[in-house]
Amino acid sequence: MKAQWVYFPKKETVEIHEVDVPDPRSDEIQVKCIANGICMGEVSLFRDSESKRFPLPRYVGHEGIGVVVKCGKDVDTINEGDYVVCREWATYYNNKASTAVKFSRRPDDPGVMIAEPVDCVVGAIRSYDIMPGDRVLLMGAGYMGLLNVQGLAACPLGELVVTDIKQPNLDRAKEFGATSVLNTGTPEGRARLEQYKEKPFDLVVEAAGVEQTLASAASYCRTGGRLAIFAWHHTPRSVDFGDWHIGGFKVLNSSPMISTDLGVSTMERAVRLMENGTFDQRKLITHRHPLSQVREAMELASERPDGYLKGVLEFEK
Image (cartoon, rainbow, N blue to C red; front, side, top):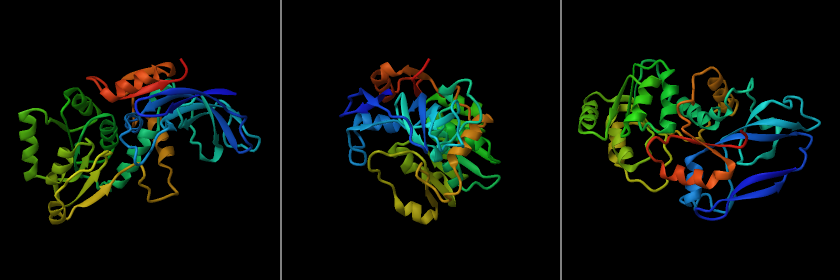
């Protein structure tokens, strides 16, 4: 079968390759991709800002949902027509059936059911070691920050304060369950945040990905509290480790790679939590693009104009 795969040959260059995809092996499934999210990981590859860790050229994609169109002869846990989590930006590809995560039903709108970002947040919330009644400060309300809001709002917290410099994002955070929001792009918001140094939080989550926020995050964390670095910082940062040491913080690297129990599939839990409505991306997916417009989609994701939260490639309309 002929399939189209997205390829980044070099910086800010996108190609769509025609690839031969054979029938699945006995233990494989063949997946038709329906939609796939545009992550800041793909943006960093497009800009070539992560060339040291992830050099180009390469095929890309990792936030997909697709439907199974063929099953290998030994596959008995998945059926044709099942919806599954998928990865590559490809119209068709083969995958080991043993690693596939199924949806329990056909989604009404597959474009808002991309599971991998939710999987990252589920794993992160697990790492936060939430105690009922915790007071939490979340710094940064972009797409991933807002997913954090949805997950944290479902926890038994005493307070959830969210900061950002974009008021529409803060309005979303309030809608999703934040107890209060602070616009730190305004003098009033900065002054209110400063007051929290007198009443610091049990958990501070840095989700902005900028040096200024990272450097200041510890000042809002109580002695012996938890400081979670959720954002992906693409360049070296400077922080005052003296403050971190004196504060006795438990510093958490709450990245997608965190895993303390291989017997727990955070992806399966992410799918469950999307299907029961705990995570709802209908107001987070702001831009949709056909595969033919992948370059325009990457440029828009790089620029992130006002109103942009998350873009999705749709392989089928």
